[in-house]
Length: 175
Image: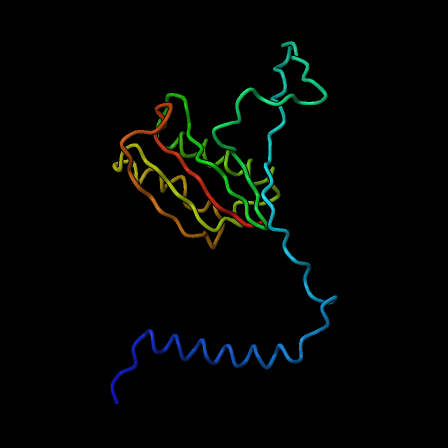
């Protein structure tokens, strides 16, 4: 008998799982006892206007926002069902890769909290580096920020990042 392929093993495992879940479905609890359905609707999460610094005059904001002349190019935070999408965040100030990485991760954490999620619920991260030589230094700050069981990550070096940021990071998380 020849050695089974990985594909064959996966097919057999899937068939066995389907048989078990099929039997379980016959004895499942009534629909009202099951989890509520996920509402698959896109929602935009907006940040509140920044507070004025001490001694600085606060500019009043209108009670009802007016429609912008043009729609925005993109939104920074969007939820869809039980997922949260955080747009790429960079650090637009002079500093080291460690400072930029710490700043970006702090901003991501703040945005996730605003959307009702957290760093340990992140499923996918994309890291864009201005220079691949910064990979190890970026990792020294990044490691541990997404909990004991971090999600998947892709890291690439790109030709340029907006605003002279040394790193830009985006992510997808669950609620």
